[in-house]
Length: 535
Image (cartoon, rainbow, N blue to C red; front, side):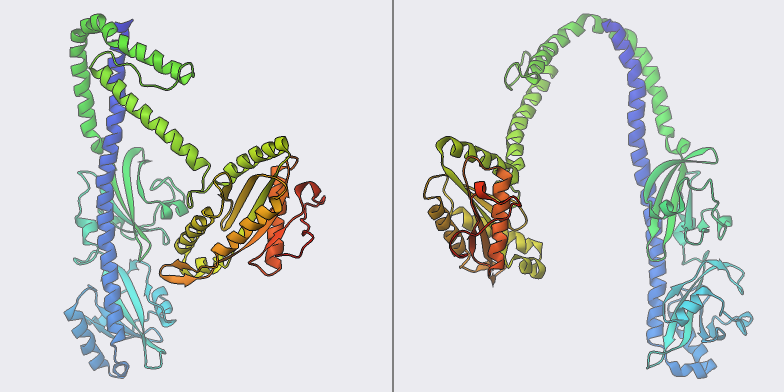
């Protein structure tokens, strides 16, 4: 049986290792492909931004008076274009009616041409910088991208439109899209999902072709726009590894695609190598498995049984015995270290589960447990318990003015001050954003006096200003007090204390108000103020 398992394990190892290596190779190839897509997208983004900055700079320094002098306007454009020739097909100034006033380089075919029907012209005429839809140029008959920006006079009125035109295949625009190799059979694609167009590709013939509804990408159009990263897809029966990155300033997408049979070719070669070597090694290891497996597995089985008994709580958690200083022994030592950390972590998790992470005070869950215990003791000894429900006054302005981090600092300082008020056997808990509860247990006939004394101490700790980020700020508190005996319910006691706290706020804040004892609460759960006026 051991030999059969060994042979089966070897055969299984081939397939499992292949899957494992495929995952690593997918990750490596995906990373490389994604890097290529990101690089090309970044290069295109820089091209777009550089042209926009140039247009904005030219428009900002444009002398409106030149609109009446075509020759001077032509010369002015020539200087800007020659100094920084980013637009391969030049720059044009269009009148408000869409006609060409001047262009450089000068093309006779542009004279008399109207751009009034172009989307980018209409947007620029309304005062917005605009990047047009890639299309075939009327004059150049080449795939072009046009950018337009309004030209304003001193009063801010749009007087004309400055237009820059770049050929999609020019030497200084989208260069990396056509020059960056993707393996031996991969390709780069530049898409405009909003226009459903290929802007360009490693295959120049795809420029300005419509994106097919099916076959390019198996995702819906919205998902295509939002998706970034890598995936394995099947297109036209060919499995491909695809990486996608965005050109944010123009909402274009760059896709780098490579057939998986090329990307995973090293895996196929490695798979054949593993198969050949495994078949050669099976006879060699056959005898080793038969004679050694029992010797190797015996300590492991003993250790496993010991661990199994611990998981069934038959014995306490303890370190596992170590029989030999070999691989199994090292594994056992490592398990013992993990077990030690697990015991420590369990203790820490128990603390976290019952304490507020910001102030390290007991949370609502631990408070409820301690209240239940206190009420049991009160029922047994015919004693009383008191619940003081505190809500901070003036805390929201700190959050609004200085942010939540300052609010957290204030809450930690409040917790530190209130800790000095309660006794060791009492409980101070944080039960909400700026709500605290003090549980006074094991009280007798003087419960009111004790709770009143504690409430006054609580008010006193707020007399000293709080220093938050070197700024002095004032905080206060309103306190609702509920007294109960062993017959009270935990939630009822908290409810009436909470409602008494709201009475304290309504009566002027910075006060404390007693609710009637829990046993005498009205059916609606509303607290009634004690015989003396609210403090």
